[in-house]
Figure 1 (cartoon, helix red, strand yellow):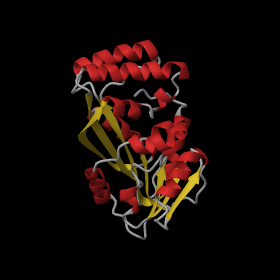
Figure 2: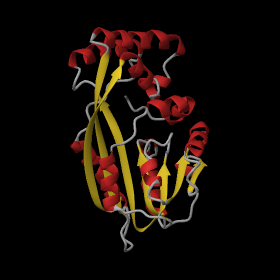
Figure 3: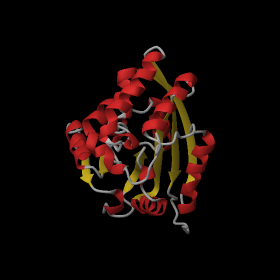
Length: 267
């Protein structure tokens, strides 16, 4: 999926579908996160861009007080209902840039596949200010790669994209070098003790299910309505011609960084 800035609003238009098709994260990620920053019922946590909560349940199960900030009203409404059994869960419908909270409040602030929508020079200083001394910022995302296991199918699908979605160029595989580069951003804003973790998993979809999955991606949501039926039919046909299933190899990156216990000069 190509990341096109300014499309963060699109997910709000497909909230139910996004909740159905977007996968959750691997358990190992949370094991590493909690080893780096343990959470308890005394912990204050902020999630930036909750979406429909694909990264939320393991955090809530720690018993912490979790506040989620979500730009989309439909997404926010869905997550309020989805996690209504957790009394210490709150959703604020707002862009993170506009969210207001006392400084030095949170033990953990995290964002799953959402922080890239926020300008770096706004997001990192604000996260730093909201964290308690010693608090942690965790940023993670999943990057699906269907070329690795489907080279011939990949080439055929790219022909369909070239015809219908030329504005959405394929993104190269996400690597540890990319994760390191992303992790080092935090150092420019006063964070210390940054850590990187990488995970991998495979997902397999039928042709029809794969079409449903990609229809929830931002660059696909903006596809001209007049072209959608033909585009998705062409994608489905390509997969059917290659046995009816497509396998994705996910690379998942986790970047961790800590606000110093002692005040340091930032920027």
